[in-house]
Image (cartoon, rainbow, N blue to C red; front, side, top):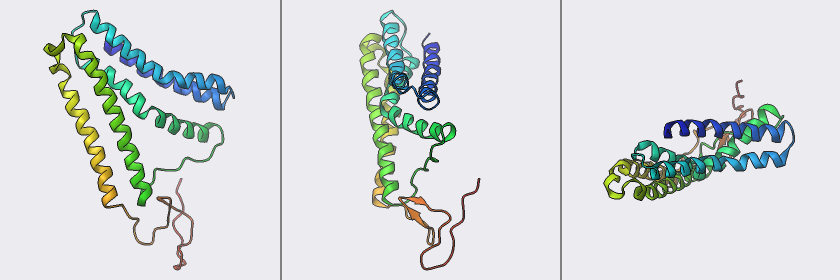
Length: 205
């Protein structure tokens, strides 16, 4: 049952996201678009609520219940940035908006970007583990605590790795190769390198 609900929630999430962006840029219905996009975290929270009801109904605790909790954690930690990413690309592809900039690759901008990723991962992991912990009393308490133990370890490692990576970029910022023009951490194409007369290569389609 939970696997079916997870699949339904995943499909519903992307359908709502697509409808929200389509109504915003193609139909110009901003209020309807906002309502649809606000519904995105509601989908994952509803999935978690149904997970709680499933356990309260006597279901045996399994990894699928923890996975359902992770969807809510991901929605809270990564949801806003995912919507912004989809918004920029939809605007570019279907509404004549500017081409989205790639993620910064060099300098302090790359360091800030890595810390943003680490922050989202930590929030997602913390929320997920909190929700999983709330499931323990519903799964015969400590008798089935081992069912969720691996999630504490995996999510803890994921958060720690992201923080370590961001810390490494703080200690050793990634510098652009010599002669490569960079603005705001991104390689600039089609510009003359100052003092060299050499042109940076243009973007390829």
